[in-house]
Image (tube, rainbow, N blue to C red; front, side, top):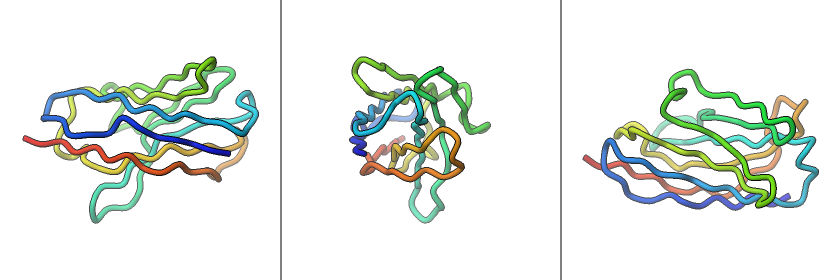
Length: 118
């Protein structure tokens, strides 16, 4: 299983970014892919997840409405659209995958750094 995250960068407060996670090596119909983030000095937290088929999404309550997760099955890519970014969104963002019935994410990609500046 391989997960390749990209799309991070520097953005001003109020701006938007779209992260991408290209996945390979598993049966997409049986898996869910999630985004997590870890800010400096804080624990890693769940952001959003999506099951490939059917497309079922879940969000952190605090981020729902600003962040949108989606997937392109043909490209085997999961996206995280982030809008109205604030300084508190600065973090390393990771994508991860798990068998959809599992409670734990077993596969992790490298992180992509999102820095929000004022």
